[in-house]
Image (cartoon, rainbow, N blue to C red; front, side):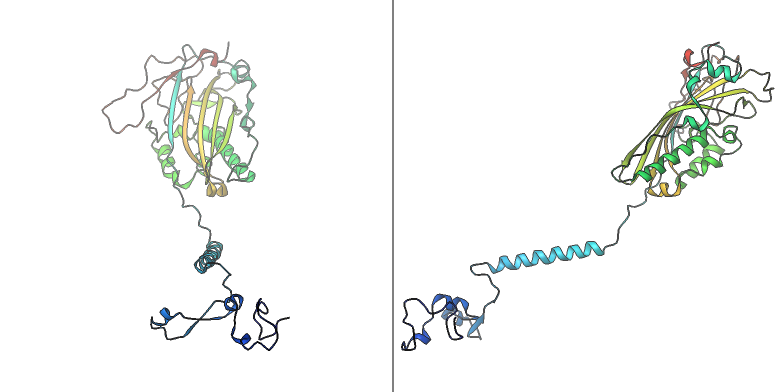
Length: 357
């Protein structure tokens, strides 16, 4: 075992052991020099005006290592540690609120080629393509809810439930259909769209932005009445993740209404069927999901039988049993006008879309 006066690695090789060597106390091998905590400056260094005769060596400096490299490693570790503390202490910053987009709508009347078939509502339904449709809200079936990359299954379920409520209230609620109220639909809209909705209801226009029938289905109660409270419906609903902070729901439903002239005796007046196909696109952000509301981004509506000359922006103008479409085409379009964003459209109602006699 080395004593306190021995070199760090024992007695140097080649030197005689014992106390008889008079130079033993002043001879140091390489290991002894490396282990020294103090180091004398060289003659050249002492000429550089150093005040101290020696410099202190780091006790933890690795043998043969690089001091700058060690310092760089320590600096990297310190920076990583500080970044971790900063990230953990920094509060979560939610994405900035994005205002709801205005609704874009297209309403297309479908004109029949012949007279509109009439009869009892049950018989008309039984002899039409709507024979296998469900009645009422049962016709608005929801798909299975599956989680997305940034939304849980429960959030997807909430989105689908909100959209179904909108479809039911805007296309099946008798009070909404007859123009009695718009409140059930309004309550489900994002606040950013309320001003546009109110203007569409109060001053409807076929300009692609302010058609009341782009938001809901309704009829003029002075012209038509519901011949049957049960509306037939069928369609599809699909949900996707539009962006990381919003879900997009697209719907495509066909609603079939049994109508009769307003004021006519429901027992004797012939009813007729009126078909409305609605293709809607909704967007729901996290706040919409929490508040049970939605943004209606786009609406495309095909509805008939109607005349091409009818203006369905404020309410649908159905042709009733025995009526024929007028020979007039859609409203004229002025290509020089700058205040009209949409061009009136009209289609022809396929014969097989009407009930067979």
